[in-house]
Image 1 (tube, one colour):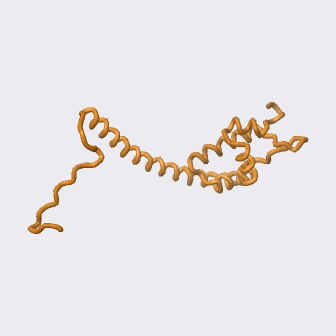
Image 2 (tube, one colour; image 1 turned 45 degrees about the vertical axis):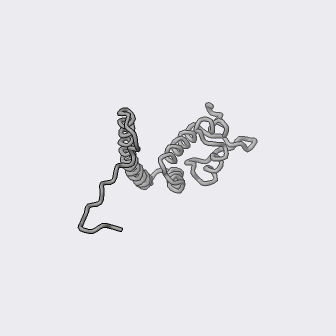
Image 3 (tube, helix red, strand yellow; image 1 turned 135 degrees about the vertical axis):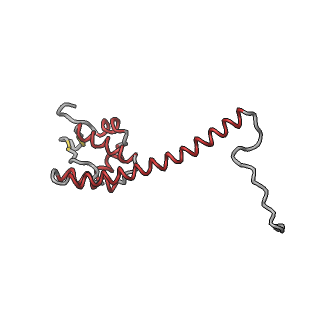
Length: 146
């Protein structure tokens, strides 16, 4: 790799992205640098390209839209002087991920309670469905419904 660079296949292995996705990312402007080509026209990636793509994988896994990654890549390609805008993009996504984590914690809380309920139900040898709680009888108000 020293000086020679990496092939698209090697980058696919290192990042977990398919060769097709790597080509798509390049066409969509998601790379922060220009991908070089060798004398035969094959893509040659640097260690920095791999690091950037690894970050992109994490950004995507966290729900960052491709348009946001593209804008971030564009800012990086433009060079210094736009760090505040880069920070704004990252902070906005940080807020999104934090909200997503809070929702997931709430979801996990419900699931944990249901698992606990079923475990206690089965350990006690109880019958019936612990998911459905018996409904209380409707209160009598001097007349019958129906």
